[in-house]
Length: 425
Image (cartoon, rainbow, N blue to C red; front, side, top):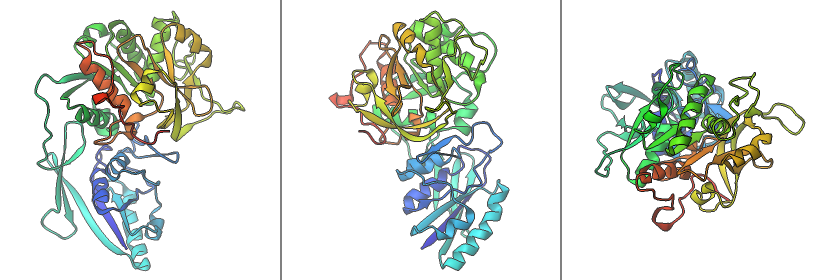
């Protein structure tokens, strides 16, 4: 029985746990992140990774779930590490976090008392590469780097790309936050690009910048637009403006969590004539509140967190992308929901609800079937994406962006339904 400690001194949340996750997959180990948190805890939105059972973890835990192909069980107290029943347990450590330094002695003492073997490795960053050395050794045991989507790859690995102009995807978000703090969106785009054999070029515009922009002109230079999630309400106005321009220009657009909310609000403003509409969280004084506090059947505020089923509405574009699945599991992390009294006005304006809450008639996914691709999901499908198994919604988005110029319809690849990531029913 072995406990493996993997130390990586980093202040970048997207790097924290990355190489440790790959090592856990290689050794067949249980990945056991500590309850003391991950890198960059003072940075905004750095603990937003949704665990299956309904717990938020440092964003870097994403890499372990992607590499190991299974959910991380949860955060572990340092004193409980040696009592975990697994044959091999791997603990990611970050010396930049004071409590992790203190945890080492406790874990080592627990291992000795339990008669468990200890291994210790250090991850060192050298330019754009990551060297892994066993403690006390001079030669590295492995060398890693990252591809342009931020995903870890063995050093020297090069992916083949189809020749031709790259697909231009515009992400309406702060690039530093997407690359250094919440890497799941970019990684998921990479998974979909691999599946479709597409070369994708990413560009970013921060929606929090106050200046007015000629969005229609900007979108004319893009093949597709991604509106990601996030808890920063300063993004809302810019995302709504982009979504309104996307409605007018028919640029393929995908919204994730907050992105779905701003897309729906854009339809309320642009199509339903509700010019005062806004999210209650962004503007509590708005006369028309498109997204309101989620409450349970007794009226108490509710926080929806974890992997939960989404009911797919038959006959929708989303249903087609999912191969006709009746339900699909989705990572959720939200407290606001589309106001149910707006369902009919939005439907009259061309917005269709394509996914529903597991047991209540709340909108979990939306689409505008009259457009090439205008779809959003309340949850976080990007967290279910994997290499070789991208999420169908994200794959469908890139397919629509690639097919835009010749007006192809969204269709299954090679005549077969796109395989959904995660469990389907």
